[in-house]
Amino acid sequence: MLNGKQAAAAAEQIRFVLDDEVVTLVNPAPTRTILQFLREDLRRTGSKEGCAEGDCGACTVVLGELVARDGTERVQLRAVNACIQFLPTLDGKAIYTVETLKRQDGSLHPVQQALVDTHGSQCGFCTPGFVMSLFALFKNDAAPDRACVADALSGNLCRCTGYRPIFEAADRMYQCGDQRDWLNRPGTLAANTVDADEQALISQLKALRRETDLRVETGDARYFAPSSLAEFATLREQMPDARILAGGTDVGLWVTKQHRELPVLLYIGNVAELKGIDRSDTHFEIGAAASLTDAFAALNGAYPELAELWRRFASMPVRNAGTLGGNIANGSPIGDSMPVLICLGTSVVLRKGALTRELALEDLYLDYQKNAMQPGEFIERIRVPRSRPGWVVRSYKIAKRFDQDISAVCAAFALHLDAGAVAEARIAYGGMAATPRRAAAAEAALAGQPWQEPAARAAMAALDADYTPLSDMRASSGYRMQVAKNALYRLWLETRPDAPLASAQVNVFQLV
Image 1 (cartoon, rainbow, N blue to C red):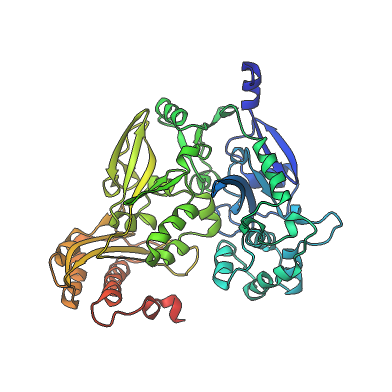
Image 2: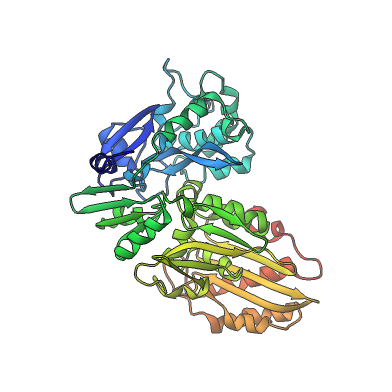
């Protein structure tokens, strides 16, 4: 065990693995980004800064951390945006950059060689980010289909329009793989067995586990990363004005784009109790620090009709870093998760100190960027009901492109149909008001009515009484109202009793 002086010293350091070596940093600036550290301190300039907001993917790196899978500890490798990840969050993890992939003899990694062979690089600025996204795919999937490749590259933009050869490289990289070392062997993380190289990394990461909570202080800035839920709750109650940091996909932009000072950060990512996803016969219990990737994977199993919404939620690197709890706490009126979660009857468990209370998600939001949480209170977990017999659920994201775009409108519906009539209707929209909000008038127009076109049309007309949407850079008020009504009509077309249309028949992205 560490003595008091040793514990204080250890608490000021962050340690992580880079190129099989442990890197130790003392009191790094809490809001310094990983990208700044890589480029300015290590001169690893392969990672680029294109947007500084997690959109273009030029800065993509791959993080490795320990996770439990089927009772066994495994390494999880996921691509993230280095431009909005704060440096202290690297503590206890492994990081891979494009420079990591070069072999000792100077030859290229299979991903890099595939991009050369298919002429997948043009100006080259975006190429390192594509390499790292493909590397994460290469290690996690031994034979991805085209949809998996598209998802893996959803966070990478190529302004030279080189997507076709990049997709070709994603196929070819598996032909270039070999068994010389772990980085070059494809699909090892999808295997049920742990090979010797992964086991060595597991041992290395285990050695970085903390015996004390991480506390970093640089000048006036402080960063706290407790490892237990009780300690996190205590710190939150003591520091109600501290900014809670989860995946940094929103908070990171406050620093890189708005240049805001964040004097106290309370990092939630080290609290194992908040990263779990538990299942009961009636609910999913999703910890506030569970990633969007993990949360959506769990929900997709119960609600396969929502698969497209989860795929179109931001990009894969953003989903890998961001959390469902953070998205809900942020409460953006154009957040895509809240409308459908409200329709499903989701609730949040709020905690302050040792006390908890449960609140319906729809009651959490009071006004634009205002919620019902008390000072010192935070979201502990999210309770999402499982699918129930007789209910139909749909959610439609209306945006200008399929991948990585902010919604103009996000529509969500849950109808309980009984003997051909609407026994209960739950309708919610994002982008139509200052908060994600239910459509009370439209719901009333459907309640007790036969599920026929006249009822659907009446509910569409009732939306005029529910919302007065704003006009902004993404859409006009009139456009938003029209597509909100159209989404309700699409629900009718897909779920009508006679000759319902398959989603592919009314999905503009599948009709191209």
